[in-house]
Length: 234
Ligand SMILES: Nc1ncnc2c1ncn2[C@@H]1O[C@H](COP(=O)(O)OP(=O)(O)O)[C@@H](O)[C@H]1O
Ligand SMILES: [Mg+2]
Image (cartoon, rainbow, N blue to C red; front, side):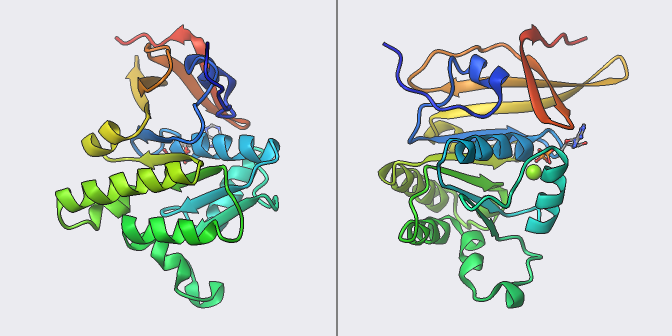
């Protein structure tokens, strides 16, 4: 029997995932800047909101104001009460936003884990996005410490029974890929002078999945995945 799944908010991607993501686990979306990680993450977040769930979105690179403008152009409404946006970008005007609380989300993975747990004392979130985790990794001094902290983070999230989507633009994400339950890769190719986008699931624990590279586009309605179109490389 198939396990229950939740939607990513992108029908073509749900099809590739044989119905969606198994809830209560941690997933990684990796790709170079501009491949559409934030767009994919926003679909995932808004699918939760549409489903009546509380969603926590931690933005570490794109300031909240920019994110709201960019995403509203694609039809996403970030002002829903079920959607909590935490701006942990270095540029955030903290003296306006108040305390040093948001800073904890960006300091390192241990502090972020604690900050998320504290956030749960007010509300239960069933979906969390950390976009991207890149800086949290860069600030870690020792690889072995980072690995331990990352594993502790995953365990904490599983205990909270929340589905987490992490984004990363790093080429090397071996530790993360090994520890998370699923990995989705976004790639841009140049085919005959034309930009082409390809999406591929490289890992998915507990479920079958489509392992081909499929075509996707970013449109004024967000990400569209063509699960029946293989990407043809030159
Ligand atoms: N309305 C749109 N139509 C087509 N492409 C768009 C539109 N809005 C944004 N994009 C493209 O989407 C990409 C940005 O996606 P984003 O999710 O921010 O990527 P990432 O988070 O991986 O850097 C850019 O390549 C941008 O050109
Ligand atoms: Mg982004």
